[in-house]
Amino acid sequence: MSNQFDVVVIGAGPGGYIAAIRAAQLGFKTACIDAGRNKAGDAPALGGTCLNVGCIPSKALLQSSENFHQAHSEFAEHGIDVTVNSFDANKMIERKDGIVTKLTGGIGFLFKKNKVESIHGLGSLKGQNGDVWQVEVDNQGEKSVVEAKHVIIATGSVPRPLPGADVDNQTILDNEGALNLTKVPAKLGLIGSGVIGLEMGSVWNRLGAEVTVLEAMPTFLANTDQQIAKEAFKVLTKEQGMNILLGVKINKVSNNGESVTVDYEVGGEAKSDTYDKLIVAIGRVPNTQGLNAEAVGLAKDERGFITVDADCRTNLPNVWAIGDVVRGPMLAHKASDEGVAVAERIAGQKPHLDFNTIPFVVYTHPEISWVGKTEEQLKADGVKYVKGTSGFAANGRALGLGQAQGTVKILKDAETDRVLGVHIIGPNASELIAEAVMAMEFKASAEDIGRIVHAHPTLSEVLHEAALATDKRALHG
Image (tube, helix red, strand yellow):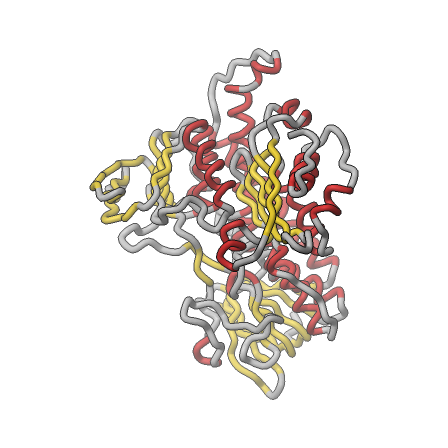
């Protein structure tokens, strides 16, 4: 193994491995250091949290649970007579693990294709030797040193701990434990109603668990446009049966190894519930442990994020940081785009990344997605805006799919007609939002979307109708 590189990336998650590949494409001799191991712990595994215990495995479980729900409750409407005798959670987990193995192995293939040297171990900054950085690699006690002109830190994030609720991934679970349950719990508790909590709650709710979500915030999905959030709350609670409590104060969590009891207050009333399993999903915090940040003077802010400028430069020369470990949304695609941008900046290029056009998605059923400003943000900023909405209830494609719930909402500048935000709850919202992102990146007006011909019948017609509605000329509503 060579120890001299132009670029060394620490972390092989969606930000790190993409940064390494792009750097290699630009002609830099590149290495990527990562300490991840597979589920069994007996081999390295690239891909970070996203591929191993996050985005990818959770979507696999969501699809399995949705298939079960459809077979159990919806096929009859289509004239399909089936009897669902049982559900094999072990088989579902095996399928999920197979997808993870395939994709993590695919990163190794991409590294070889692009001549990125993959180094297994925990990377940390030792210091500079002239204008070259020395990075120590600790592979389970076996240490070595590599050198690089530029270092990109992409170490991601870890679950935020809840004091008094120690995760053992047996009865009290974090995101990793929630993805590996091999039996449907009769009663499942979740602390936190963010993306992880709602998605995992949806999986096990569909499979028959009685799900209770305890959320500290008084507002559901506080960062989401509240018209869309209120619709989502109604669907998840009244129609799908999840019990979501807001404004909850957790007083005590007691784990006896067989079940977990949570003592809490809601609306001034003291309550206590016991669950077979408890998932703690109260957010994530930047992962800087083991970087040797303090010793080399790497600056962090009061929340523990590595401090960077608009171009992802740290306070140290030729040290960059991207993804969950820096400011901005903790999203895999944001990390990937930052990784590409940093590699290109090292090459002297001037890439563009607009945080206001980064899409957000919650993979509940129906899905929730958005880009740009919410109505609440526009009001707070004093921006004069116009909104247009259209529903899926009368959309032919949605009706054919049997998924006619939801709404598309477009917010535009009242004077310039420029699109300021798009918010969707409905079928395939994760895919539909791409048109809105494209429109906003190209500074489109609502009229531009309204003038574009959308294929019929498609779900995208609802976005078209919402654009027309901003000018009071919707054709189907």
